[in-house]
Image 1 (spheres, rainbow, N blue to C red):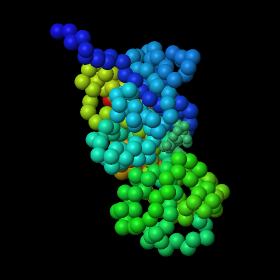
Image 2 (cartoon, rainbow, N blue to C red):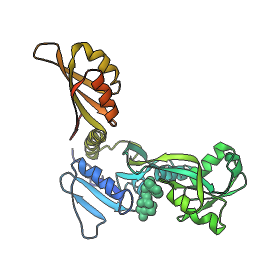
Image 3 (cartoon, protein in one colour):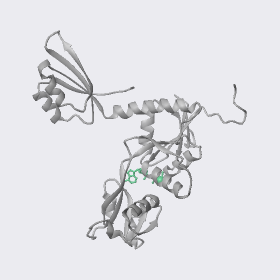
Image 4 (cartoon, protein in one colour):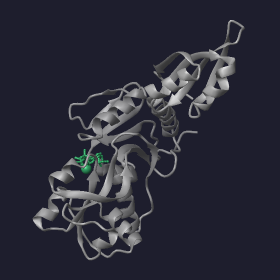
Length: 304
Ligand code: ATP
Ligand code: ZN
């Protein structure tokens, strides 16, 4: 049965990413490693998907949650700081939640910290009572102050938050921090963390009901493979059967090791998928426990 003429049938997926900024290149790279490619358009705001019916919309990161809420975009790559802030603002305005993080992407890591002037002797959050705190994250900050039982003035600034104490606009700030260099340059020090943030693939609360559902499921499958592959290594070595139990105790974090008998004798060949880093120290510990011919190989692609 064909759909009624008025129904909007969407058979392409549209993903919003940051046009230019910290998340642009890693977002593109991650989507490209899922096998997506695009025809670059002249205006560079919309990129038509070539390898798959998945298009890109290049926008400001702050616009991404709203674009998902309005159904202009299906998915978006955005910092969880922005997603949580705007989600909180929606709830404060009495609106229903319209998006959620679908996957954490492992890049764009930063913290949302409260920072105070260097010369404050920090004794605890009670010191913020009655103070003015400048931030671009009023919803997250207000929620945190409520939980801490602190009454403070939230001064909302859209940028250059870290300069507010020097300008006399605020006593403290609540801002994004990665290395802390910007804070230090403004004679501020971080004293407490409200949120650990990273880039996420954000999407609507409910799954898609049309052809986009299958596309999204395929993208998530590939993304999960890419995310797992990124921190995976293949460990290969040989050992005597009698040493197997001792070696396995040194590898509690490896996934489903495969053990093969070599030459029908006591000698075994092992291969195992490990996550995180396989340091020289760990390799030396394995060697001492009897592992021979140790090899750590990168993993090119994974599909569960
Ligand atoms: P736009 O023009 O798209 O609004 P922007 O200035 O808001 O750009 P960026 O500074 O590129 O954006 O930051 C985008 C995201 O990068 C942040 O929302 C945050 O999730 C992440 N990020 C990681 N480290 C930092 C950092 N040290 N400072 C600010 N954002 C960071
Ligand atoms: Zn922004």
